[in-house]
Image 1 (cartoon, rainbow, N blue to C red):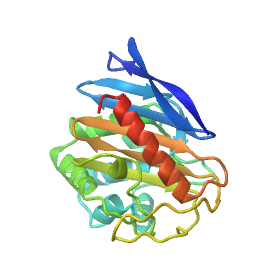
Image 2: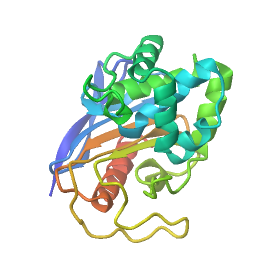
Image 3: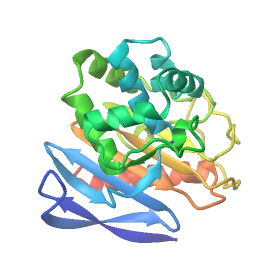
Image 4: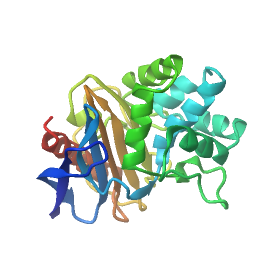
Amino acid sequence: MVESSSAVRSASPEGRSPVARASVRVPDGVRASYAVFEHGRLVLQHHPHRVFRSASVIKLLIALDQLEKGDDPLLGPMLRSSDDGAASELWRRNGRGAIVTRMARKIGLTETAPPPAEKPGFWGYSALSAADVVKIYRYLQGRAPERAREKVLGELRRATRCGTDHFDQYFGIPRALKRPWAVKQGWSGFGDAPGRPCSHGAVPALGPDLGVGRPVLHTTGIVGDKIVVVLTLQPAGTSFSTAYRQVTGLTREVFRAAGG
C-alpha cells in the first residue's frame, strides 16, 4: 500500500512560489523528505525541513572539517565505503559534536545539530534535514576550497558497491539513476550485518522482508547537474531489502517528477 505526496515544484531558490505539483508515491508508513536542486533553485521538495537522524550522511561534515586541517588517509574509506571505524576516529580526534557545530556555522545549516549530550560518541545520531543536505552539496560545488571539493566529490564518485560493514550501498541514486553521480548514503537500525552480505558481483534479486529495528535509509548526492536528497524513516520491523527497494523506487519517482 502506498500513499501519494504532493511534491512542490518551485520557481525560487528557497522553494517558494510553487508553479506545479507532482504526485510522488511514498510507501505507506514511511516518513519521507526529499529535495532536488538544479540551476540555482529547488525544483522539487517535500517536507525539506523535516529533521532526521543523519546516519552516515554526517560523514560529509566529518570529512569537510578534517580537510580544514589537511588530508588524511582515513577520508578515502570513510567516503567511498562508509567506513565507520574511520569516521569514529576522526570524530574522536576532532572534537566530536564540535565538528557538527563548526561546519553548520560555516555552511549556514539551520537544522543540523550534534548528537544528544548523553550520546556524544554516536555521530550517526546527529540531526539534519534534506534542505541542509542540499546546502552541504551546494557548498561543495561552490564555496568549498578546491582541494576539499576535489577530495570529497572525487571519493563520492568512486563510491563502492559494498560498504565496509558488508551492506550494499547501491540503493536509491546508484541503482535508480544513471551516472555520472557522486553519492553519500546513510543507513542505521538494520543490525550489525545484513541478512545477505553484499557482493561485488551481479545485482541480486531483492529478498523478503526479514524484519529488524526502526531504521533510517538515506540516499544523497549529485546526479549530473542536480543535487538529489531522499531521506526516510522506515516503519519498525522493516528489513534492509524492503527499505532498499522502497528507497530506490522513491528516488526514481522523485527524479522523474523533477524533470530528470
